[in-house]
Length: 133
Length: 295
Image 1 (cartoon, rainbow over the protein chains, first blue to last red):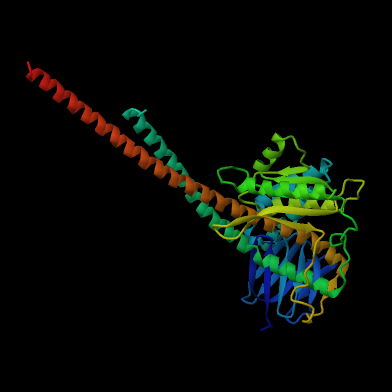
Image 2 (cartoon, rainbow over the protein chains, first blue to last red; image 1 turned 180 degrees about the horizontal axis):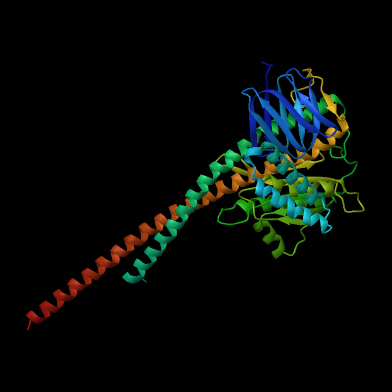
């Protein structure tokens, strides 16, 4: 059995997930990182996308993240992302509809920051929900 | 002038109906405070992790970032005033507005320009009635702010702060909100959000773990500080929401108690009027009877 470490996933309004895990994989702005127990302390910026936790009970949790950080200390690892959400909490059809709406908006020439970040968020949610299936 | 019996009864009924409404509002406010407090508690892990990350970067290098840099001279200030969307909350909104007015006067007296941002319909109405300019307003979430609301507000404030003087940028941003001390005490407060003052966490004596930053400390800081600002704003909004609900509960409790007193007085008056009427009738009958008997 691989060694485990404590993982917390926090979004701006709640603690999304916490528990012992054997591995944490996240998409940073420079590429994918895999974190195992005893990883060196690290703070890395996350890209919009998905993160994956292999919990110590064997369950795989997929999380949609929209920017934010992964922070690793000697005691624990944390994903800090304002809009983090567990994949199985995401309503796929709803997320797809949002994504389509935003795509249409972007094609109509709306390239504002708000639209772009909402687009990335929706994209991350759809991806996470699809991977979860 | 003693009101007629019918009038008294009618007034009594109407006060009782009002009391039912105020009592319902009191109970609703009470149950929502519990929710607001739970929501505030739920954000604690995020705040803790964010603060830890900020102090990690702060401990790593000297922070040189536009958001934390003090301007040489402060010529233009912005204030964000957090008020409520609805009334019936006692002096809640007027207290915040008064505080904001005092702050504005002080800043103007120091020779600064002041731009005002406002959340909550009450504050907006106050300024619009006096035809005073508001830079930007938000409304509709005062008792239940979401993170997306804080996001929108923070983005506006951050870009205002980072804008150059020619583009109308400001040199500092202050927030006037109501701090939730307890169910009984809520106090308006002024806090400066930008430039940020970063606290170095547990202190410099303790040597924290040596972090690696990816891609590098500057980029991490670039990402981190706006999130930090948003979190502060979100905190103020949630404090204000809890305060608003507490003020509303207090006001509605006072209204209910007041209605109870009114009902008691009115009931007494009704009884008195009824007694007087009966007495009068008896006197009339007795008077009539003895007038007949004398014949």
